[in-house]
Length: 321
Length: 234
Image (tube, rainbow over all chains, first blue to last red; front, side, top):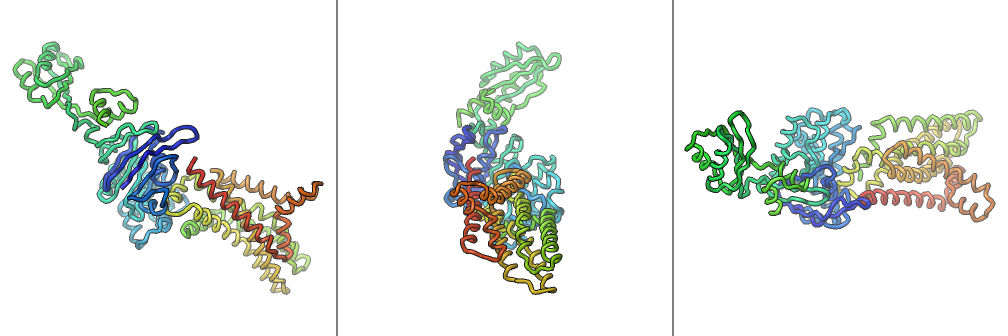
């Protein structure tokens, strides 16, 4: 659906994008992650035809954005970082303007009403945009992106400025939209990307540093697993017991947490929870807590962005890419 | 294209700017009409049009100042440039909407002509010719104003710069009289707006003057298109 090949963009002499390439199939939701100034918005602006790239191509559903901009732009609904709203218009007036601007061939009133229902702005339709709160403005911005039912949606930080309940609503909406639309979503919130997207792209200093399915980035699909164990007993003995368990590759001592208790992380090649339990149940030491350490996207992200792979999983994942 | 035209035209009248411009224009045209036609009892409206030349210099920057500057400032240009419309049609729509507001202003002359016709029989060919001339000249100033507006984010800066340039253009004639070089006087006469406009005001519609103003309009609309296009490559 979306094919981006070798995008490069310079701002004066500074390189904003460096050989960015990715493809996205129909009905997929891509999460675009990166720190501020990484090139997320620049990439989105190039895909939507707002900016031109210095090199590289963008294809939307087989149409090149430079060769046939009108046709390609018709297939895209774009919500920029700052929603492009005309403050002096009413919500209805604005959406009708966008409807005409995008040359949509549908019954106007019904189409706009159904979109207003979808993003829940029906009750402010007659209000002037400059009097709306940030949350409503964001939703009006989303509504204009949905006008014409374009197959591709590009949303630049769609949940910024919303309250927690609205964030949950918008995420649910995006997931629902993802069933019919191909969506690219940018965010600096990892939890958001984790909750909504099928695919994740991490971009830093204009380069794609990680491009993977979510499962492999979060480490749930990786071959190593990690356990956190809190045991009541003598540290040295517990440590040597854990090390002897079959399959364990590394035991890290995290020190004493409560009086008489010590905490360890146990890394292994396979699931060793039962073996750890059995090994310790033969002794007087009791297990107070045992939980798998889920390798969070946040760790990967920080590891990749700072260039310091914090743990082995990070290195594994990066080398997989 | 009609969507942008309608929105732009509507935006003049959902804010005070459209009404303020219309009121100011009609106020001055009314005063000149009184002083030059009603008070001396003359049916000749040409002096009114000549006097209004300077008011046009003031009024048009106010009409065009927000055109592209506000779009850039409020980031609404992202909606226009990512929509399936070409840049030239965006520029043309904005130009036509500004020109329409200016044309509304010119209605005051028609009203004055009608007022005169109750008392005497004014020369309608002079009035219509003048309104036509003013639209043609006005379109050059509108295109220039839109071009200036596309260069900045601030509508105030756009208004001031276009106003200064308009005044410079109108001063060209006086400079033309004072310089001693023949060739420079010739060049200035060719570029003079006021000299050409005065021909219209006297009721002379010459093809070369019409072509001159239309060429200036096209030049600045083309330059505006280039500025917007260049922004994509910035």
